[in-house]
Image (tube, rainbow, N blue to C red):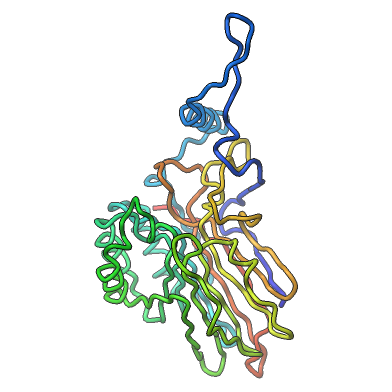
Length: 322
């Protein structure tokens, strides 16, 4: 399956892997007696390193203050299906950023919307999530999957899944939990399958039935799920993931930390056999309200030939600014 990633609508993002654990920042300092001791307060040191990175980069960014929108062609061609992927919103409180995300989606007017996990970061955030999702004024199919934060013992969202599911349903989002859906757009088929979270959930490909000549799309929050995706002869599969935040904080252009479930898939396009993975760097933050990587959503264009056979997918990164 040919896959193309066009240039970002705004500035390009650079990402390179370094260590994948916060433990790599345990430092050593000489003592007065000439010996060496470990500075045990690694979190304090990590914070210092991050702050220094921002100062050297000349761009201290707090998520609620960043986002930008550039105009893109809004009309879908007859041989295309246009989808928007939103990932890792981490709804927590009302922010101009979330208003900008909603406005951007409404202006893009896609044919289908995918939300790939980590929507709610607390029980209280469920209502915040619903508040913004109801503002998406696009009459199209909308789907969501769970991320690790929906299962976190810290957020306790899993203890209120009935309320969480109802909030999604009332916002016209269908939650897929190891479930599939086949969409038909005037003869152009999109076969969708949503996986449960790798962290905290029980993901399974059982019941996934891709179709030849259709665009076959799997939603999986953690990119590491890509290693479990089956290879099917003559049927290319696409997985859309998030989770990594692209590292969220870059130190001299390199990410300093990636969460469990990332594997070797950090940002952008990866291919294995006939399968393709796309990892979005997403909208929000993890525990810290700090990010020097611009929040973004993804515009995915599925292209079909004159006989409605799927032939290609194209990705555009839309950086979001209020």
